[in-house]
Image (spheres, rainbow, N blue to C red):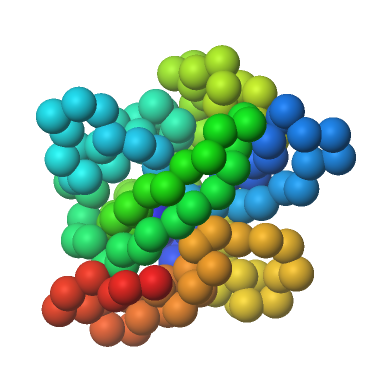
Length: 148
C-alpha cells in the first residue's frame, strides 16, 4: 500500500478482460513472487512495474490473507502479504513497464482517502483495506501482520 502525504492510498482499477461485462474492482499494486524472491523484494519490484516508482523499502508487513479466485480463465490460490510505505508526494502512474496482461486489465488508478474508502459502494480489495489504513495512520504498524 502506498500512502501519500495527504494520507491517501493508491489503488488500481482492474477487470478480467476475458469476461463479457466483467465486473471491475480496485486494488493495491502488487502481484506474484518470482522464483527465489522474498515478499519484500516482490513488493518493491511490483510497485516499480505497476506504478513506475522505485521504493527503497516496502515498509512493514501489516496484513496477510489467503485468496482464491479465477482470472483470465485460470484458478488461483494465493497467499498475500500487504506492506505499507509512505511516498514523498502524490505519484503519477507510469505504465511503461506494464505487461500485456496489465495493459489489458488495468483500467485506471486513483488516490483514495479514508473517507472515500468508507463511503464507496465499489469493490475494493482487500475488503478490509480501510481498517488497515486507519490503523496504520492512527497507531503505526501492528506488532505482527493482521490476518485478513
